[in-house]
Length: 254
View 1 (cartoon, rainbow, N blue to C red):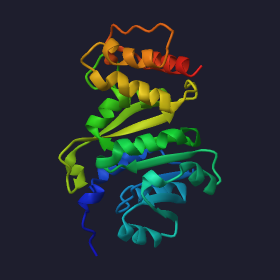
View 2 (view 1 turned 60 degrees about the vertical axis):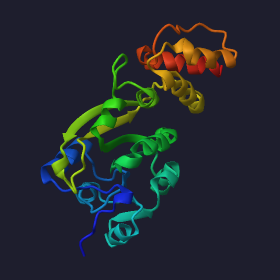
View 3 (view 1 turned 90 degrees about the horizontal axis):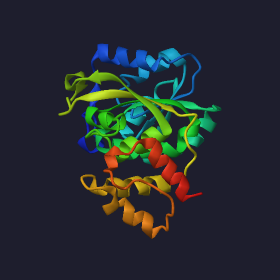
């Protein structure tokens, strides 16, 4: 029976064979690797991945799709909202030190998924995700650009990222109203150990009034926390490099 895409799950199924092949080549799956796919849907990526690695763990919320996937002998199916999945436990269940994570993420909750995965980065070898092109642009943005913001800082603190593939709407059924892209995310071994909650709040405050100088937003926040160090507040949030936000967050928890 044909599966009707469900709008509430943000389902857009990848159908273009050339695009599927390009994504698989970008992921470069190898036999025996521990891999988890988020939102396998109709298994467009799932099948070529499992053919190359032997076994695959998939996370699927749609119960009808999960039932279909269970019939595949090489798949371990986690029927769940991905925002409730403990990826450290998933790694342990696969007897893996680190797992590779892939997926065509639902665009309506892609940012929450990225933030949910952030605390599990130590258990991850790399991540390859299909996302709305606009989101990928923000993820990899450089300072002093319009796309640079909270998402850029939070993710670049923890990952080295690269926009690896453009994907047009016609590669999907039904076609989304936006362009898509595949991003590669590799956890940084040299990342600064930080309290992620402090960094998150700091960056959120900084970008809350991005058109104004930081003294109007971050300055007051730092003052309320009794910060005695030096930090140039005569700039806008988008002019501050990721490394500077890291150093400030570290100083606040020293």
